[in-house]
Image (tube, rainbow, N blue to C red; front, side, top):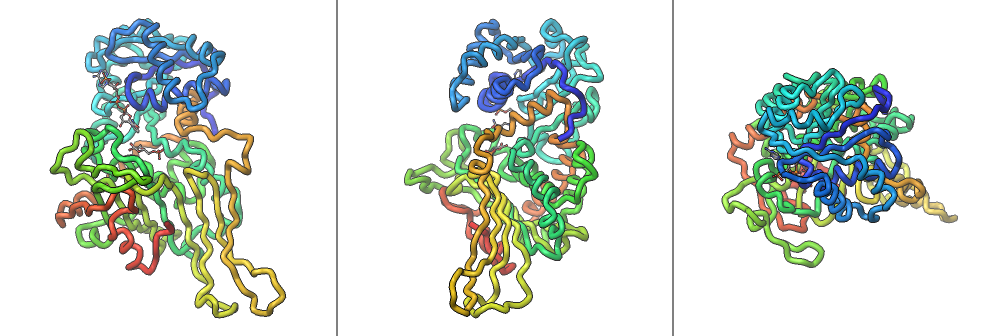
Length: 489
Ligand SMILES: NC(=O)C1=CN([C@@H]2O[C@H](COP(=O)(O)OP(=O)(O)OC[C@H]3O[C@@H](n4cnc5c(N)ncnc54)[C@H](OP(=O)(O)O)[C@@H]3O)[C@@H](O)[C@H]2O)C=CC1
Ligand SMILES: O=C1O[C@H](COP(=O)(O)O)[C@@H](O)[C@H](O)[C@H]1O
């Protein structure tokens, strides 16, 4: 992607530094950037929380997070460099006056202040106001917002307005970590650097597209958060619609942030609204009950720690999305995501159209369709399913389904696949917004999702049970079979 500004030294201020995301993902990602020598030598990292820590306490907290979450272990030399950048400031994030303390920890004259809000979105506005009160916002100051922004279109507009009071859109970086995944970025290369795909990427060649984001994990101690959100708000509104928009968008004029975002938002705006009249035909939602994962008994959603036995929050969603534009008219995009599925699997399957006529033997009534499978995680790679002649002297031209399989770990064996947050933190430090979501994208996605919730409410839809360790409710299979199709897995 194209960096909008040259690398400059930054004050990277991590609000919520003691939280789960900061410990599990953000601090390890910063450490990896240090290891790869990608952080400007004068950049500082300032942790912010509401605890009275000494700098030493904070350094220990960071070391503990890295010990726990950096898989390959900490390299002492890298750690020594990294820890020299650390600083800590105690702030009560709801108290605007308290932010004045931060002034002593940053240098607006010589460094760009990048404020990462790894906190509940309900305090994003307070943080912006606090930064303003303390005189810490200039034209270069950036703010990085975690997802999901809001609970629906109205609440997301409130949060975006609170932020926009102090920060321009060019200063606002909305995170969707799927946009930082190496394989999601590879979609751009696959689509726009390969004529074989570019010229076949529409309703003349493609029958339908499947996007699956299956998770093995359950609620992982986040029941309070998750029950309020559900899989639709936690995954579909952001990650799945972002992936869909990258698969379906028209070629952007360039890789500059707004050129890419302009094309993505056009796709989301073309999604045909799902209404009470067709919501039962086009959507399925589920909630897991007790089952087995890898031979172990696991509890149902309502038996998880902290659960409320009345909850009708969905942990699984499947949708048929239709994109009303010239390129995709008549090509359904089937989306599916759920917790407690049999395995972690994130992939896009592009099913090409059937051939009009079979000139080969009768082994197949119809020659099986070609498929392009883009494996986002795990086993990152790309497969193309094609038909081949079985070698041999017989006259029958026997065909066999075969696959061209490009595995990233084998083909690029020298390259380490970076975690999505490494890429996104680097881009935020460099000042490149391409991989961040613009306000109109977030709002268009909420509009679509809000319509589905309204339709579910109107028809009184409730999640259907599925056993933990299964691929979701039976209705998810019916969603495709009634269109004469089936899920790839
Ligand atoms: N965890 C994850 O995997 C993901 C999280 N996110 C998003 O990232 C953000 C952070 O999530 P997560 O780390 O899980 O949440 P946590 O609750 O673990 O962390 C949030 C942090 O914010 C701090 N905080 C909250 N209110 C205040 C306040 N008034 N003053 C000072 N500190 C405050 C909390 O402090 P204290 O410790 O004192 O309570 C806590 O350390 C959320 O927006 C979430 O939606 C997005 C994707 C994945
Ligand atoms: O944002 C989130 O994403 C994770 C899944 O991310 P992945 O990179 O492991 O695919 C999900 O488990 C979590 O609930 C959600 O908030």
